[in-house]
Every structure is written in C-alpha cells, then in structure tokens.
Image (cartoon, rainbow, N blue to C red; front, side, top):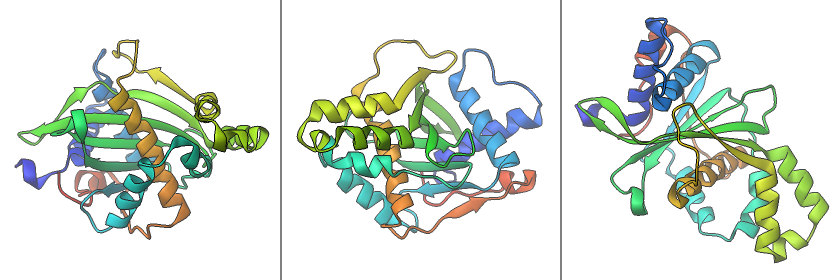
Length: 233
C-alpha cells in the first residue's frame, strides 16, 4: 500500500477529506492545517503542480542538489530570480542526513498576484498504511525574491565577498513564522536547509535549466481525488 501512493498525494487526500467534510483542520495540528490549505489551493486555484524526485524530470533535482553544495554567496542571485507562475507547487524528495528515512514535501504557495513572493511550507514525514504521518511540525517561511534582488543591488560586490553580508541579505528577504500548534523557538539546521533547498528547486525551475516536465492536478474535485503525483514515495 505504501508503495502505491506518494507522501504528497496522501497529504492532499487528507486535506481533500477535510474539505469534503467542510471542517476546519483540528486545532493544534499544523499538518492538518497545511494539508487542507494545499487541497483548497488545488480545488480552487488549479493547477497545482507536483514534481517528484525519481519522476520524469531528474535534471531539476540534480541541478538543485548541485547548487545546494555551493556557497551561499554564489546562490543568492539565483534565489533572487525565483519566480512561480502557478498558485501552488509541491516538490517531493527523500530526506538526507539526520532526516534520512523521511519523505519531504516542499509546498510553495503564491499568496498574492506576485510571482516573486512565495510562502514555503516543509512537511517531513512517512507513510504508514497509506496515511501521511508528520514527524516534524511544519512552519511557514515567507520569501520575497524581489526584496532580495533590491538588497543585492544595494550591496553590490560586498555580497560575493562576504558570507555575513549574504546571510544578512537573505534574512532581510525571508521570515519564518510558526504555524498554529508549532512551538516557537530555534529552527533545527536540517529543517532550515530544506527551506533554502525548496527555493533553490523553484529557482532552477524558473530558470528553465533543468528542462523539467510537470504534471498538473485538475482543479475539479474528481481530479484532485484521482491525482497521482510523479514519482514514488
């Protein structure tokens, strides 16, 4: 059963169930909040694009992994150029390091009519009996690519020479906001890296360098229920 459904699809099915029941996500359950949010985006603002590692677009993930190994100073220009035409996009991939054994879903939602403003959610979990089980509570990162570009223009060459300047520029363009039920406090480094990796995936896709193909979910309720994201969990 677990091999027949992806973690992303299990999330969407849970959210669709909440929508069908016309119920709010249970209080104190940030994963249910996120699942319902994604299902609503797919149902009302389709297409919701799902890209899965191991699917038909390996170059996208390969290039993002390559860029992730570069110094932050070398990655900022690409992050500042991040754009997303769709209302929502989900990237699914395997966890590494301390998150090995988990499946990761990075959901990027555009809250306004600005392709350069994104809300990034990270869901870390596993499948058990076809159900998505969260292992790390999600939080929200608000990222303003246009603001980052403006800061880079002001700082000039200092960004390429100074990791501290690069970090400050990125911090000025991004803010992590705990979701309901998420304890405030320090963000684990492994989780924080996933936010930047999600934005790197988006920047690679925006640049078109990976030539990735996508599959979009239909906005109809039936299309959501039958949607099969690319790749296997």
